[in-house]
Image (cartoon, rainbow, N blue to C red; front, side):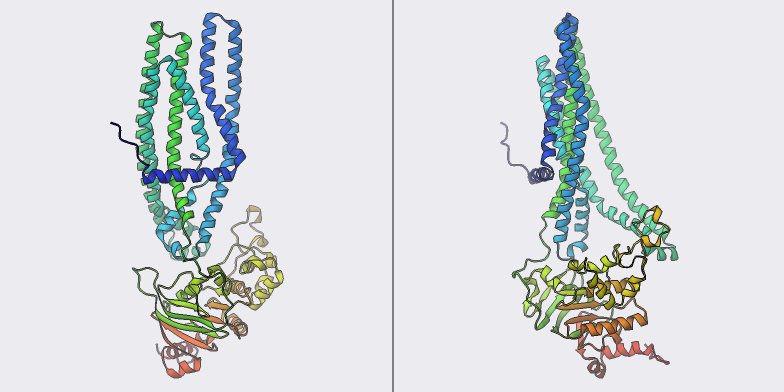
Length: 614
């Protein structure tokens, strides 16, 4: 008794769901191209059967001397020949255009989903990075076997059905044999495609490491140390080691595929050979005409080709769907931060409070913050100081809500910031990060992207640059604010043209980054994390004097290792080992003789004739 057919396995259900999603994307990408491709595929699928029958009729007509009918059949073959010559080119164009449209739609969907992740935790997760790397490979072209490849499947199905019908007229047994021979081919190809995607996923980490070493060797910022320390060969060997891992995996897979494909080809050739022997014996016995034999040979060859093509379509579609699964998985991920409960965030009026805040980046890692209680009063300036690793930058990430506290809460006028839209929270802040970005954009764009609404407002951009003492730097550039701050885009004719793009020093970049932050004038909270770490003494003095004026009466948080820059803050907080060690004004902390006083004395001793021993 044949067992009942149950529901598809979870994997099968997932693949079917992915296929439906992929086809919906294809339809959305180009309805006209989809319909046109389907019509062309249907016509192309009927051509082999038409060729087979017209060839049989032509040969039998010639042997029977029916000259009138022969001319008609010959004209029909000529017409099919014209269609065979023209349709592939039309198919190629429709395939390419639909793939382009689908690729754009998929990339839009993928990067929209990535931009939807408001936190940073996923971008520090190796598993997610591997998943994202695989998702970026699921392009319109790679999804072709599922979308435009279905048209090839339609053509092959129509060809197969029509040729099997022709073959059944001549030999029902051979029609059944040819059909049955396709089953092991399909099983083997599906297994190979699944293994290929599994191997590619397993090699993703090695691919990321290879890309890292490659970008490091060619990175202009790394070039100085690489050459100074003689790291070129060391990094090259590391790169080649990862490449060897990737190629070894691909080599094993290619060997398995080559052996399997060779065995399948021999099997198909054997079936065709047996059919030819049968047809020859039948013709010798007078059971088949010459035209029948030619039709039989053409039908067997065409049916096998259609079956192989259909199996190939299904196998590559299976592989494409497995790859598309990564795209679907990434785009289906929810935001990595809990959704808000409120629709808006009121302007800051009382202050920001951290209440018993604990945080660590992973359960396997030590605590970075341990029970921090801190208030940033409205309209007051707070300075955060401490040794490296004390947790200062982590605290900034929590205020910006790139992460949520593991324990405790952060309150904005008494409201838990987890309860408000994260975009609204960040719009209320102006932040300069210690590891600020330098963009390969123009000087105006490097400042203007701090407030996209001001990107075309040159007066606001120049005002922000002037506040950061970056205006003299920009005005000295070949094209002023329209100068491209990069040399990676110019072509060969621009090689000797300094106006094509320039590079800045670290301190100059820092002042532009500060201008980008100060463009957000009038925000509720200003956070400056080491705003002068790359500046010379004179520039640092000017910048801090301007920041003092700017921070007056504003709610601000300043982080700096240079304690002379924070002494005028309304409140100085000393962080160490994830704990608040002490807080107060500069004079209060110096009088207390604690951690701050010791750090200040050590720094001040560098300017004395007889430094204080460490």
